[in-house]
Image 1 (spheres, rainbow, N blue to C red):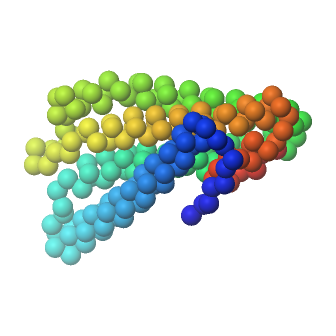
Image 2: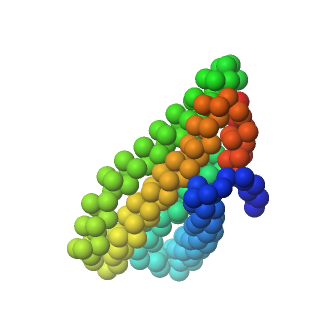
Length: 191
């Protein structure tokens, strides 16, 4: 597990620490859910192969479970720098451009996930209020948990990007690379 070192103080530091705890907790929950999904799939495969008796509803449960797993892991993935990025510009760009690109990337990431959360909000509310289900008559899976995971994961990812943008902005405007190194848990190197 990553040890996060930060000299970020004040409300930004508190928010960063809180997001760290939440993202690690959600990642652990997602890992446990992934094990459960794998066991359900294995049980279904063995049931089909050995007894010609598949487990009803596995497909629906797995589809919704994978969405939940992906979005629960999203804030942690953002924190550790696990999102896709190109290193070509880091290698060839001058330092000021690199710092600008890091800040722009964090702000664009925050905007992307804020838009996703806003777009999915209505679907989440609708799924909750109507009791929306997915699946067959014999087995139906509630849709609300997966919609909630999309909204919550996106909001937390956007907040994480915004917290990461603060030291990137400080680095850009002061020319000091140290704030970029304070991005706790960040595995990528900044220019």
